[in-house]
Length: 142
Image (cartoon, rainbow, N blue to C red):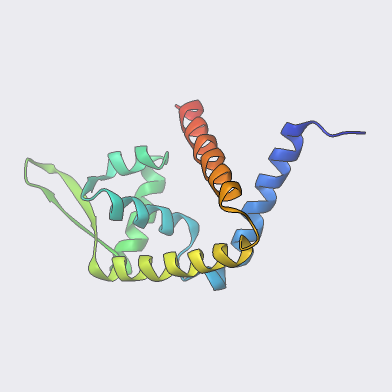
C-alpha cells in the first residue's frame, strides 16, 4: 500500500535532522542553536535580543539562555543601544566569526561529499524546495 506523501515527508525530515545531528563531530564544535544564532548575527548584526529571538522564532527566555552560552564562549558580545540605553544589542565577535567560518566549511565539505552525485539541476531544485519549506514554516508559525 502506498504511503501518504506527507507521512513520507515528515519521516524523511525527522531522519534528516537525526542524521545531520549524528555527524556533529564532523560538522564542527557548534550545536544547531549556536550555529543558527551565530549565522544570524553574522548576517545581520548588531541585533536586539527580541529581534534575534523573533528572527529565529525563539522565546525570549530560550534566546537569552543561548546568548548567555555564546557570551561565555566569547563568540558574541553585548553592548548598550546608543539610541536607547535600556536595550542591549548583540554582535558576533571575531572569535565567533572564526568558529562559525570553520563550522560552515566543515558543513559545506560534508554536503559536498554527500551530494556529489546530484546534478546541478537537482541541487537547484532541492535548494528551492528547502527554501520554500522553511519560508512556509516561518509563515505558518506566525
